[in-house]
Length: 269
Image (spheres, helix red, strand yellow):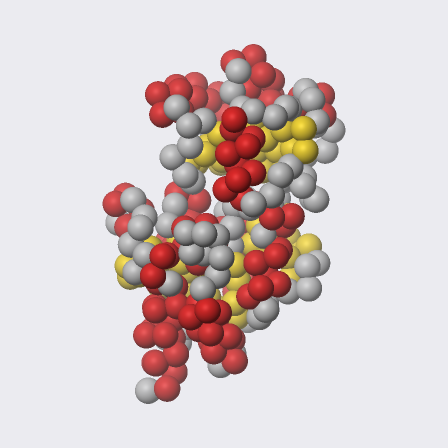
């Protein structure tokens, strides 16, 4: 079955290690788009820190943000949203405050956190975008956030955080590790996989006509949902177990190499 929609994670998947898009990757995306393939970046980032990549790509038909809690069309108009319920978000913020965990939330226009810390600076450096310090998060949360994110670089503390938080909140929300030091929280309906399938239906495509690329736990839903699920060679072994194909590492523009071989060359055959 021909591939008619390509979705891909950004960090450690499409992007090079310096957080730029390689020239070969841009050529492959445009060549696929010119053949009628829908192009969809799919990231845990909010729109505020990923739309510059949509503009650089230049041919995106839609964009999946905050792990599927926000989906935009190619012009930046919101078409799907699944925020975390407000009462649940407030309880998570109270839990974080009472136990000294760093937590940040994602609104429509930016992300926010209580105060500047080593964790907030780490996230800002990796995302290339600095959010807003807003004081007490529980008090600040008067609108449901699209995502919540714990950041903890001490792996022993991260194990403790997961052990304590998942039993408390795991029945109400979706909790998963994207990077070893990120514990992400979304509404159960907000996954990259659900967003990819919703977009495929919107575009009149079958699930089997999709190809999805990723490297982390928050990519598994779309890797599993795709007609062809592709995992980067730089991913952890447990992520690779879900792959139909293993792509070369992000540093080698593996997304471009797979598109060239399995989409562009097959279209010409």
